[in-house]
Figure 1 (cartoon, one colour):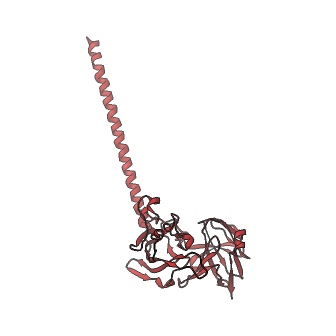
Figure 2: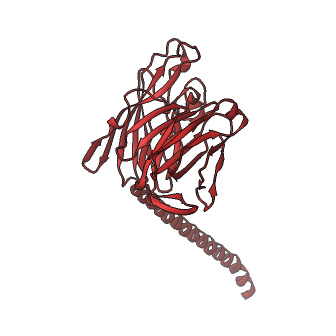
Figure 3: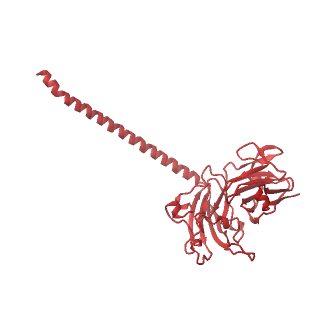
Length: 350
């Protein structure tokens, strides 16, 4: 009888054990879920803190116009270019209008946007030329490299981003929001991505540069054969040189006034002897280039090496500084570059 009772109780004990196991599993799952929620919350807080830190700088309110530059009497295709219509810098309750730093016509390259790590950019693009009967000219955009933005500011077509056509049209402007978050310091290209083809019309002139100055604000310089880090504030001039498949296209920036001067193609550059000058090279098109500047060596970024030439591929960039000492010539020392006369002078004045 006792054996029978014991036998009868076994399934009950087995059931209780099973129930206890299930309860333990549920408890573990709840614990895991709780830990997951805590980690998610912490990650969200970290993201918010990062975003706050990134947006603790200035806000640049920019309006760019995309315009047409008709083909000259010698023929060829129409060119297109960006023009700065407005640039306001906001810091707290203070607003500074710096639009006068730019020329009042469209330029190739487009305006160089100089910002600091931690700044935000709110850029509105307007399509202000007549597309005629060409549907491929009805959309124009700004697609930027290097800085941070969400998918709505990618500046591409819905076919690519799967969200929307992020373009300005003749009847509607488009606004992009970028953040120069920590780690984005450097020189970056921006360009159209939506006009004529899915790759955009950068080959027709719709491109420019963004310079993000880092919070450390130091620049490596070759000082008589030795590396020296100098403050960015010691740089007197900036030269932005885009290297196309057939020419250099440049802009000069006077760091004392912020004034920008378009130099167009294969420009002559200049500096006063002893002044620090920074060069921002960005390659366009489909060719690789070998940049040289006779009689000058400079620090290869991220190293202690002094180099006298640099190979640059499409959409790669190379930033370096020199102390102006003597006249020179810069060039693309490749067979196509030499054949096409891709070169210009660097004149040093007393």
